Structures are given as C-alpha cells and as structure tokens.
Image 1: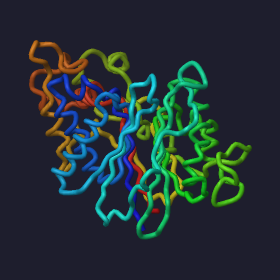
Image 2 (image 1 turned 180 degrees about the horizontal axis):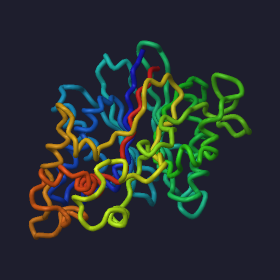
Image 3 (image 1 turned 60 degrees about the horizontal axis):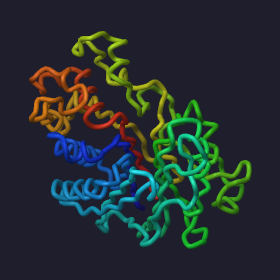
Length: 357
C-alpha cells in the first residue's frame, strides 16, 4: 500500500526579498529543503509563495532535494487567483516507482468555484487540487490546498473547499474516495470545530456524498482533522516579539526555555483533513530543532549559517539587531531560536501527516 507522508507548510510571504534579495536566501531554501528531508516527507504542500518567484522556489527546492538525497522529485505551482493575486501554492512529490503513487495527468488545477476574500464572498484566494493514483492498490486520492482569509470569511472558504467537485471525482465520475486537504484555514480545529462540518460530516451514502458537492445538511467529505487535540504543543502559529517582551522582559536569553511558550494557545489553524488510514500526525517544532539539534540533523548548522546584517549594515531579517554577534552561541537560547525562525523563515510551523492509501 502507498505510504503518503505529506508536509503542509505556510512559508509566510516567500517572495523576491526572502528568496533573492537577502544574504540569507540560500539559508532559507536550505532550511526548507532540510526540514522536508528530515521529516521524510514524500509529498509537500507550500503556501504563501509569491507568484513572481514561486516556480523558481519550487524548482530550487526540487533540485536541492535531489542533490542531497539522490531521490527523484517533481513539482507543480498554481496561482491562487490568476488575476489580481500574487500568492501561489506549490506541490512537490517524490517520483520513484517505490513510492507507489503518481499524479494523474491533467487532474490538477484551481477549484472552479469562487472563494471569499477579506470583505466579500468572491475574488479571494481559490483552493487548488490534484489527484494522485496509487500504483499498487489502484486507489485515487485527492490533494487539496487552501489558504483561507484571516477573518469570519474563512467559514465560507471551507464550505467552498468541500463543495469542489474535483475532490470527489475525475471527469465527472465518482472515482475519488480518499482525500488529503491541506490548508492554513485561519480557524482552529478545536475551538472552531463546528465550522469544519462541510469537511468532517460523514457522507449519508458511502463511500461518497450522494451528489458532490456536499450541500445538504449532514453530508460532507467524511474527513478528520489530523491535528485536533487542542493542546498547546499542537498549535501551529507563533506569537510576535511583542508577546515575548510582555511575557518575559527585554533580555532574550531570559525568555522561556520551552518552545511551546512561543506559540499562540490552541491555534491549530494549519491542518490536514484526511480521509485515509492515519498512521501519525504532528506539528514539526522547528524552533526546538534549532535550539536542541537531534543526532544527524542539519537544521542547527543551517540556522547558524544565517547572517545578521546586509552589506550596508541593515538587518538581514526583522529583529536581527536583537542577536549578539555569535550566532551559534545565541542559538543555545530558545528565545533566539524563536526570533530566527519566526522572522527569517515563517510565522507558521509545518504539519506532517503519515497516511496509508
């Protein structure tokens, strides 16, 4: 059976500055690639890539993964709204036959539905989808990607995601019964669980909603949230430096030694809703991996390669001026590991889900 390890990650405005106009552009790309490698993901979803450089970013990561591991990878990039938006999604996946899954040609695109923006029910970021086929069990599974608006409009976005007929079938047929719906939903899986009913409600007539899209009450995608415990260590979004200063004062070395202290409580807004056989799911604590390097991990070494200042003396990333000159010594403290990851890489932590299809 195909073992799918999907890594879903909002990289936070990964665009021309972070990718090309900072002395840390290579370090950021290496950090992302290394996280993918160490997670042993074979299917990766990235959100908040700037459309102007999204394909370059995806190709750079693909080539780095191949060079570092000897594996074969491919990628696909989709703009969330081809007119008027600058955000893209990227998918990367391993292509060796041993992976036992492959994309179905042509079965990938943006949802044809309209999605909400911050102010209205239309003209927002759309969801994207792709359909894969397992080569050993002959199952089709849909991969969904959606970045919801950061307000109450997210509820409508989830409804539209669940109503995307392409998540249930190819060419009008009902031939997709497995789903991995990755997203930054801007709603918490626990506190806002009722708003995810279109994704989580069980179909009234298995194995699929009787007439996708699932519009009737009690009819849904039959998915479960991979991250659903509501515990602080399952939170995926980080606080700001102002929160840390208020909590622990001005001396970064005196900030909390537990990495969960830097997360917003009970905010698992990045998640994968799955209909498959779940093996495991967790939030990857990149901050702790920087502060406490695991045996064989390269993330601390990559973090240590970040520079603090540009050639003109300006900070190389926000709040870099708060670091002492010796980066490696500074990273012995959790507060500095937080500042580096939060302001040089992303304000979201990635989610890793392991399923069997």
